[in-house]
Image 1 (cartoon, rainbow, N blue to C red):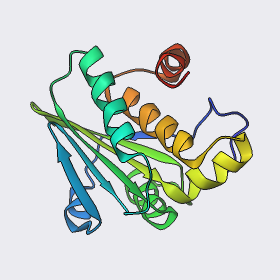
Image 2 (cartoon, rainbow, N blue to C red):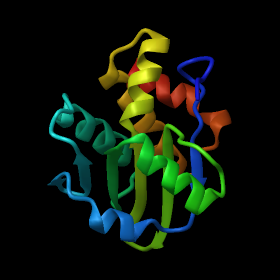
Image 3 (spheres, one colour):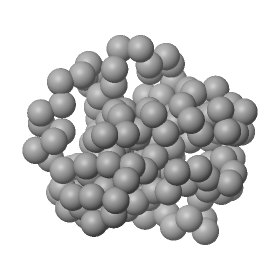
Length: 156
């Protein structure tokens, strides 16, 4: 799927839980305070990504835990079909959990991020940050209509 601008995305916000998939995820897991980042070893700027998520959570006064899962088209395609009933991959999915201390999970397709980065003329890392922030803002309750100024504040 190709978006027309870096500020449009195909986020799918769902409430059903993919927890069995997350529990079987075997990539590198790094816990920093309340942020768990599951990502392949080749991802650059992991610390910057964690700082971005932490700064947004802090600014929102949110002390809940969040999982960020960087994965592939196949995983996002599976989640999109299982939990949204839509065929094909998407770039980001946000799963809201109704647990007192757990905000939810953001899944990002690295395949989509790589393709979209080329389309938008940005680095892959910048596109990953944009997608993670987009999903995180959904978990925090922001609709698309309110995201652009917040995205600009954090991403420039």
